[in-house]
Image (cartoon, rainbow, N blue to C red; front, side, top):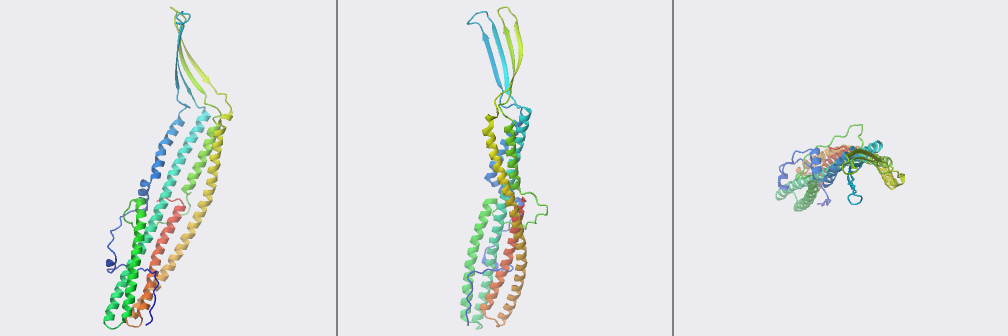
Length: 408
């Protein structure tokens, strides 16, 4: 009898039946979870998010400061003057004053614009951070799903080969098959068992990476994402880049609106007495100090703001080109995944029929064991390719939604 050498790498898929029970322990039922819940879990566990959320207090303080007309804290002044140690006419003068630098209307408007732009930039950064976490969840979820499919298929293939080996052993004892067939079947069962153990290890590693990100200890059965409708939203990473550019422009406007130090307004109250027995004179004074320093003082700040604007504009232009390329590539991958799934379905159907015919022929003694094993291998390879292609389709849809900036 010619001995058929089987390839070392094979896997397959069949409907899970009772025989699968001995191949691997029963898995606990996956928790009911949606992609939105997974993203929210990962969002709450992200240290980057904690930092960005802490900056919200900073942005709120900036907005509150921009609403104030005071450029800095006011100053309280007290003056006490007497001739007690000189002429001794008992002349006395007391004065209390309150002064504060204030913004001009133009300066205040530009500072308000800058504070609002900074708050919008922070909000965009938070949204972008959540989009990035969504991408991590999508990737690790589908990687874990793919690894789990391979584990299930190899366990199923091991189970079916074990059943076939038991049948071969019975037929050898009955004298229908040669002893070499038992050895061949046993060898393939051992190889299938080894492949299953390797796949189980890979699946555990993928699940561990998914669990670290989301906190889920078991893999949920999440449905494939629907494709985003037409009328593409602006990717969030572009919104963040545009917000950074707007903030840089607002910073330049704020610097240019403040060519010198802020004007200072002071209010004072004075009480004077010219001598003994003289009445006290009271007066109120108002002072305004306008700095006369020119534009040169703010040139370093303006140059720094201009540099930030140039950097933000360059980043935005690059991201716009990259975003369009990512969206186009994701659409192409989705189209390829859909076509590959259609072909995988055709192949799997044909191989199922092929194996069914070979099972009947082997039972009737018309086909040798190596031929049946080869047919089963090809059928299982077609089935696992089909299920893997379904996973690939889910991943392709997730990548397109990610490129479009869709947060679950």
